Length: 132
Image 1: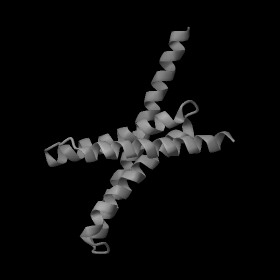
Image 2 (image 1 turned 135 degrees about the vertical axis):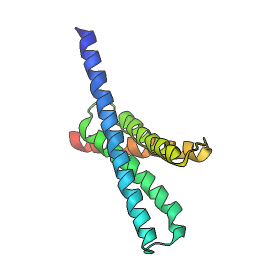
Image 3 (image 1 turned 180 degrees about the vertical axis):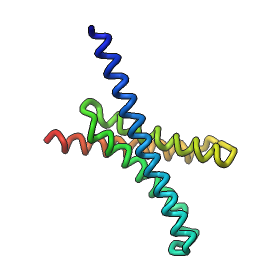
Image 4 (image 1 turned 180 degrees about the horizontal axis):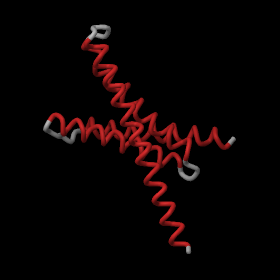
């Protein structure tokens, strides 16, 4: 009896993680399209692209963490961080497929650690607020 409950919880956790990662990836896609449009219309200079990329990564991790924080009762900080990392890894994988190359750099590791921290903080703070 205990094994069926454990399996059911694991399936729900993976489903929640994948939904959080998908939501983060959707936010990333919309933000990239918006940044591209703003640069194309010359409302932003091309020098704003690196800053825009950083803001987009933060928004992606934040969206994934918020989704997890709204629905997860146990260890929301952990699952929020993992969902944020998964969404950032999904975006890196899609961009690598599009560009036809992949390079593992320290910047990628820093982005993933930043995503974990932001996703964890967002999920933990939202979960704490929900329980009060």
